[in-house]
Length: 89
Image (cartoon, rainbow, N blue to C red):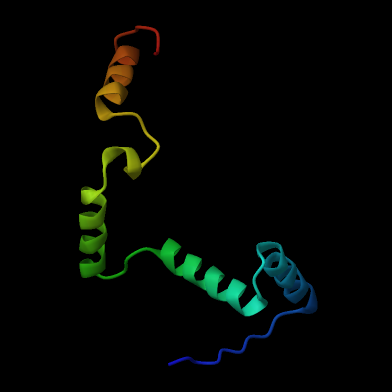
């Protein structure tokens, strides 16, 4: 089932949105649906169940996919080297 959603924006905002949609090769409706989906993802989980599900998904990801960070042993070695007065790595 689909629901029609109507919004009111000023002319400049509408034209900027159309230009973005054209640049991505989609129509304005599809561009707005994609923007809404991205906004939902950035809001993150809300309920305790959603937070637990997110943590479970994260724990199942390989280390190299979790974040652009070096292995924890390398980070700890660098931190400790600075505390010991040694030059940083």
